[in-house]
Image 1 (cartoon, rainbow, N blue to C red):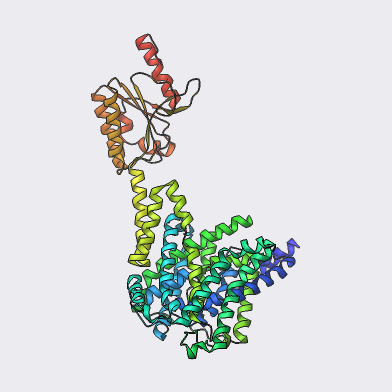
Image 2 (image 1 turned 30 degrees about the vertical axis):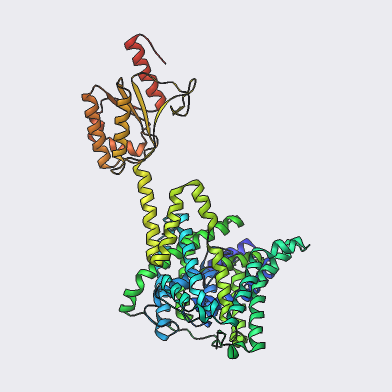
Length: 586
């Protein structure tokens, strides 16, 4: 059988590894899981298309071909791609000032955004830039997603209340909703309130209540997954039964284009490219971070290995296909992946089955969605957005590292006050500032030897042996122009504190790099200390650092010695004191 698989892979080099080695016993689980995912994400697909300012069918189309392409080219066995809240919000945020949502120009711009971000993501993968996902810290990513979630909630308020409101930013939209609050429609408000209550209960309380009443946890979790679909079905049934869209002016999805739609090949013009390049780059970057982070979490759970660069090529190709087919940018969906996992998916074949199931649903007719109330869809978006607000991450960061917690808050505030693009730029800036502050104020310790060992520890934390007139100083950071002032200040204070110092040993075990400025400062320090009768020694210099210092003036003029280890420096200097004084005092 192995020979057969190898032959098949050789004959079809484009065949993905998971398909070349597919096990027949997984087929039934994958097909059932794919069908469940397709059915449960229908409301989500419609809602995110409307959130992006696109026709509702765009969300359904984005759940067919792009899903197949990602399943074919991606490396994650369980991650599900499709319309997601973040990309939908970014699409609307970028394009709504440029064209009327839903217009032909807007749809073309959205397709151009998907195309540009897809090509950039593919380029990241082709150039093996998967490591870019590590450039954003988790608190910054959490802050960006949390801030975006609040923006999503604000954008849905007008639909929950049934009021005419809008604005260029979240603050203006909130003001408009407040100004039109007296025009809230009772029928719309009743529908949205009931849907919100039921959806919140299904997400946060249904499993606990059902298990308390004797239902098995597995069955309770199935009901929790299905409940959003039931809630939207009941809301749609109420509209049809009571004729609310005609008698009470309850807004509904309206006509959803039937059939598969057509593939439209185009290339954005130069003017459109100039507008879309920056937001497309941000979307590609955020998609890279989110997709790889989620894929790695799923891979760890399944004890698999994720290939970040292949993952990026798959995600990028999915967006390129989506640009020509649905016009809607796609990404790795957290809720889709969770449903996929819970439904029993084993391989990417589940995504293939999901896409085919969605294809059958679209072919069977989309007229069933025409009278689905927007208030109920808005409620489903709000509940999904609430789950994206990561309070737990903030609490953990605040308890562990206040700087990371402030970076999280700063990123979220930047997204809310300045918009998505400047918000993520704020997060990156805060991360860099935090990194520079930490590097510019390195931990420096005076150390001594633990009695009866060769281990050296901080004199303020342990009872240690020291040598009179000898100062052992450990710098826990690379030396560069930004932290030299702090190091010189600490060194000066230690020399003032102990005026008997005749030998200074710099312990370099944590120093991975010494830049040109630091080398020159150390050279000057060596000369100044020598003029004061103090020798400068180095200990535990790493090989790459020593290779560079060998050709520097510091190495040629060093007043002391370079010791292989701190303990050898301790022994040599202690011996010198014994010989010189005839006495060794500990």
